[in-house]
Image (cartoon, rainbow, N blue to C red; front, side, top):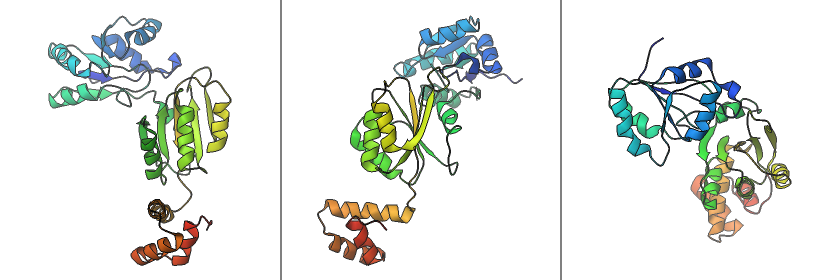
Length: 272
């Protein structure tokens, strides 16, 4: 098997049995393991009797660790990068060192393995394979609402924390009140559950239960056509400027050659 200088190694989301044979082999044979939290990684290493030395590498010390890692590699050492759970560089640290190593010509490979997004998507129904993944949603409500609006015609996949999930779901409902949504919690762990339902039913479920664990979710794309979605956005912009439904119908029909009567009905909230 070809050897590399630097290995990106996925670790289990929760169930230690999900690690691959190759991942265990690599973690045994490299000289150093870069990890987010040595306490978390050490539990994994102890389970598989791996004695490899760990180096702290997380989002707060990425840049200062670069020189040390490059020096170790130049001395002929082999290094692996892991995150606390799942695949490094996917909403986890690693991009800084990988860019530097590629620029300096070191060989890098990534092992296949655990990833919350793929684990989640493989167990929910979908009409197609296309999706947009945005990682953790921003903390500012208006930014979340803008993302949901912009991705209305795409399956939107995101991560969320337990202390924010209910607020986030309510923000989604503000933008997409009839949205269908899937939520996965504690994937591969003892209390794993996945729910696929209308947004209000999902809100009710998590509002009436103790919310713990890490979350991954998907907002199903709107069943409206792309053209109708874009038309509704234009109507909302003009409504925010206090134009009447009649004026909106006139403006949009003349500018974009839409049916005037159809625009008027949409502007007054009448379903087509």
